[in-house]
Image 1 (tube, rainbow, N blue to C red):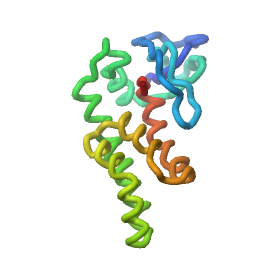
Image 2: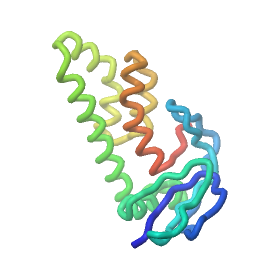
Image 3: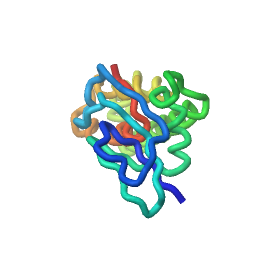
Image 4: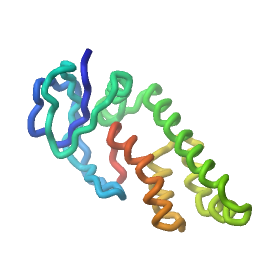
Length: 165
């Protein structure tokens, strides 16, 4: 059994080995404050080994690690069909979370929220998380709603880093 990590600006590999690497430059930070720019590596280590350290360290399961190698960051600038399918799956999950939250509202409040999130919903339907995230944070919804939903996007971005420029 192995463990996998995405590490930004690695300080030490621990007992791991580098599987892939890539660099993100010129990207704004995530709205949650996490810095995106940096040198990233994908690390594989034995289950009982010493974890890597760096500016940010995110553990992946083996399926996520396989998909991570197929991202633009770790795949020479091109996302594969498998990664795009994973991103679409996450987009549909986030869309369902929006729909669940909206279902608790009155019709008029739900309609107002739907209208405010229409550009976000369109991007989610297309499976484009980066565009949906940018549109969501540019929308007129209140900050509490943004604070509630941004982690859904940002958790995915921690596992599968990308430029938001």
